[in-house]
Image 1 (cartoon, rainbow, N blue to C red):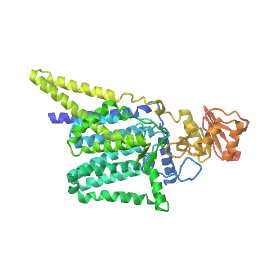
Image 2: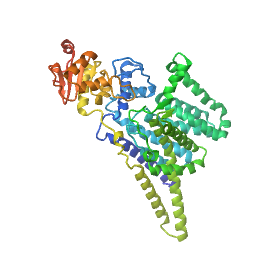
Image 3: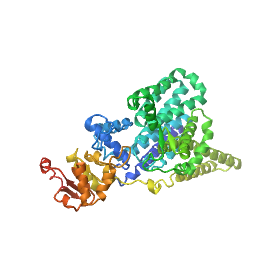
Image 4: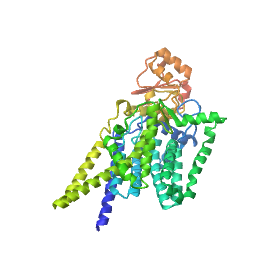
Length: 519
């Protein structure tokens, strides 16, 4: 085997190992938990389940017994989840836990391809996978642990940038059109990131004016895209008049404090990692030496401006603060990788020169060992506190096995009006297809959650009033309800309890007796 072939085989081995490590690291929260973690994940599943049932995406909340208008701007996510579940024949709830890790590995490979194509430096590209896998996740900024529109869009973003840069440099119109197509996909998954990228591309072209002259005709497509984008969303945004429409549009691009359920402000170097941040700053130098890699500097700067706009004025533009801070880190990853690659090259070069002068026979081995030690230290620092976000940011389990069993039981009564505790409410429609009066706030409006809280905190008389006022047909409780009004209505009592307020003749046509958990 030739030396070149050995290097290629070793390269494939290291990349495969890094991608496998990325998969396992991102999957690790699911080692002991088999259900989706984040409320937003459950609510995206609910939209997909609704699409599967009715063969149409609707602009309202599938959880609630109301048809109040709730726009779904992330229909690409909904369609993908529905098609994936149907075509693969997989249960969308039981198999969802594999999607975050799978798409993290796909994104890492796209990132590797992007960095390697731009730098032609294998180790910088390999390091990019490591920094990517080390990106922290929590329930506020989201992240790789969760499969949401944010993480679903990442591989398309990296691939779009790769096609855009290569297309411009090679004057390859099909690649530029592919970049446009990929951005179109991103607009259907996470529209706010599409707008963010359209801030980056023009700046990149301005500082590389020669590329504009070289590709003037095909770049006209990028002028057409925003027009097509506006045409596509015209019916959605139009509110009967220009001023009303502009106010409505502003509500989608101006995000005030309080947009998120949890509102925390982060010190970016601490969140991203001090070592990774310093290397990203160091990476500006090698990035400036290449025309193509300047796009990462632009990406980071544009994101930082929008982030600090929020920190200073308490509102953000284009995307919410939580999403923009993660978008910024996605752009910093290649800079950190190039910074580490450049630093390792400097260290190895200096050691080689030193040992060449001293005629030390083990100079090559020692220089490689020194570089390896630096890389290990950086990796260890990057993963520091990876599993220890702030207390208010930590993940929690929406349901346990006992709750899943109760909701599977309720699937036979699908379409019923259910009162369920807020903790498990996001799992109700994806599993049992029952409707609620209130659901935990996520990417869907919560409905009447105060009524739900009052029910579970209230006395027997208040519980009865709420059931009759809201027309509740079923009640799910995590403990037995000792009220006279509930006597004789219990139909399930396996750690969770279910009470039926149907007329007896309605339940006669539904066989519940063959379930071992049914009473």
